[in-house]
Length: 159
Image (tube, rainbow, N blue to C red; front, side, top):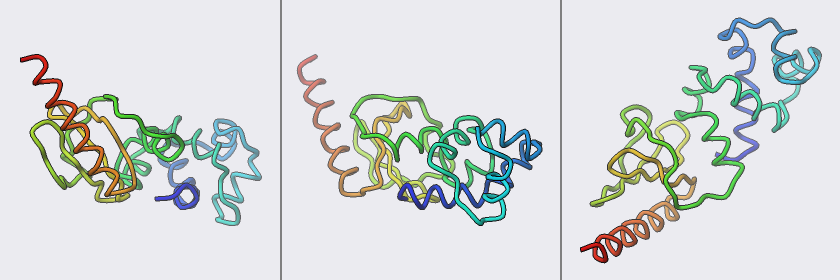
């Protein structure tokens, strides 16, 4: 999913997120740092939210069922995936992919999974700690292979 597509999808759900969180238009506009007029235009689908508004929404409403079902992942992590370059280091512990994730390939140390809603990929270790996320399947497999190799080399040097 590209940034523009994500902005569009979140923009179309902003009214539902506001209702879910039981905020008035005035309250929601104030929380997001936009005018009530701008919020109304977004809710009526006349305009899309800005990237900064979407990021703010994801940060403030990261437990929103609507947002989670929209992308199938933690909204803040999803924004980070879109906005930043990825590194190969452990991030946070996940639930292991029991919901929203399909295992693509599993090695002795790492599992490549694909999100069934957004289609993005992640690599987790056997303790369910996320190491990497991307939208590119080939990139994900290359990184998983690289991580497996690094772990095997590390294990060999410890022995």
